[in-house]
Length: 456
Image (cartoon, rainbow, N blue to C red; front, side, top):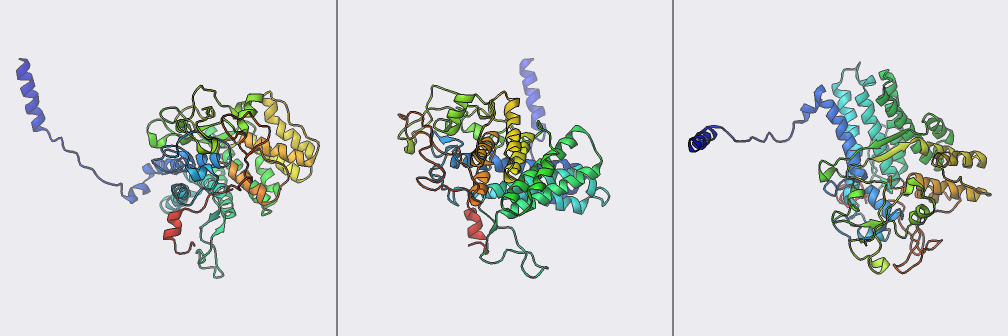
């Protein structure tokens, strides 16, 4: 009977058509259908996650590379397979190294901007101005443009020439990175307009609105530092975001190409590529136990020798991201309080600046900042932003705008150990400016330079 059953099953299987037909790529027009619109929005969000720091399979490592260049982490392992490349370790990344990052960052910008154009074309005229799907892609376009502005040296977005009917990049010209901030400002403004027009007041929509105000406040702070908008514009937006508000971009444990890249590079699942050993954050957390700068002690060393430190170094990994699906914060109310503090310093109001800087410290039961001079106040502000925005792909943008504009105060960048044998130094032995100046931004990618005739 058992043999008969097996034979019968084989005969049935032979009679079935088990072939699979691959339909190929989804036709573009399929995305015009209303049932596809939510997926278009998720695609815009996913492209932003990829650019900030997803798996090497997708090429986005801005958070990781920026952290290495600005001493938010130190190298602790190999230069390949989730390690930090040699040119990034020295603080001078090449256009070849950041090529994939340039591409993924521009995909992150293009995807939501193209989604806006698609929605405008296919949505009814009565729906487009108040669709929360439209508002969301505007929101992601804002954060993608901010990511480019805070991390890349120049823009290649077309600029208007004297003929107002033309919109092109003038030959041989690379634009200012501040153009990305202006584009981000416009995108956030559009997001706010559409969210408001939707009339929705549910929790998700309110959170989106707060994220748009926070995003716009942050780029207006960037622009204000360059004297391109008044600080009052940033203050007005920041005031609308409560302390505990936050907006994050997600990652996923479902597939390696959706992992949080920074975490995976130190997850001790073959990779122990970076460490807090020798950074400012090592000593700061050891002294204060401030949870914003938490790292873990292990008895291990990094996964390979590091030439600049003369061998293998202790593996003390950051503990801000603890899973492959750990999200990265894009904006928060606590950042808004520091924008308010910075605006107060610009106006010479050190008392208000101190009060704003201490709000989160008080909430965390930490001692407040103290200072007696304006220069010391600026140092405190820069230090608080370094701690508050640690490992969020924001540090290079801050350093650049302050250094470009000769803002007073010291920085907490640097390496505080020169070798494994060193005791902890109270002052850095290597900084963003010495012994060799490090990059404050990433260059335009090599593929852009080799294929765009307008880019030298």
